[in-house]
Amino acid sequence: MLLWKPALVMVAALFAGAAWAQQSPMPPEIAARLQEMGRVIDPPRTVALYAPMQQKEPYPGVRIERDVKYGAAGRNLLDIFVPDTAASPRPVLMFVHGGAYVGGNKRTTPTSPFYDNIMLWAAKNGFIGVNVTYRLAPQAPWPAGAQDLATAVRWISDRIGERGGDPARIYLMGHSAGAVHVSSYVAHPEFHGVKGGGLAGAIMVSGIFDMTAMPLSETQRAYFGSDPARYAERSSLAGLAKTPIPLMLAAAELDPEGFVLQFDLAKQATCRRPVGCARAVLLAQHSHMSEVYSINTADTRLTDQILDFVKTGR
Image (cartoon, rainbow, N blue to C red; front, top):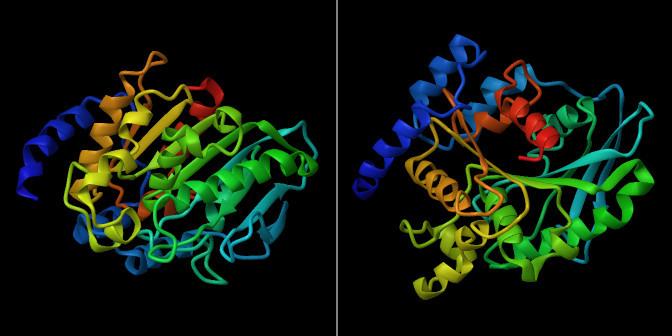
């Protein structure tokens, strides 16, 4: 951990001058609680802060299909949120949850607002929302996550037109372990489910991109394996430096330190691309979980950036 501190000082300096680092409309009492919690990943305590701010079912103005099969595995399931209002073919936002590679789901409990909140935000803002779950380690190690996303992207590309979606405008968004699976899919063309990846853009929120840059946790080893000699080829950093797919990176100010280091590594790597740097967003005051639990509340810093990324293509 101590070895990362010089890099963290550099990252903090970059964040302080980043064009996209903004002041937040986060309620002061929530900001204080998150600051008190610190650089931890604590879903239960963060849920307690944000669940009262989220909608409860039934959700008006949206049609929902739950647990649609997109592949052969038991966890190859997705939820689809389609706005009731008629419109031209809509862009598609596919969200991939986290869970440390060994857990997590597209809905944390049958009555939870998470991660329906991201789908509701998508539907309100002109997208069709698709919430994806996937196989877990250790039963399904690397590259199962990327392979499942390839299957899901192919399914959406083939079927979303029936629901008013535009298969030419699929945006793949992942958080934490989900961001790792998104980056693996983007960075390794051999996994692409559709020619060229089938994506109009990829959004990676608090991911890990270089497995050689830090010691791996037990759950990371459950997915990536125990042989360090394989970590470089199983990382996404080199591929992110080459892909022409538009990219957006985000991290939280209160992310654990390893995620902050990885955000900076990915930002630097993408700046080597001929198409230019990825959009890089710091979410001031936010933690690893609050950055996604806050979606579909008055705190629109992350979602404003997503909308502009979709609008501009960069």
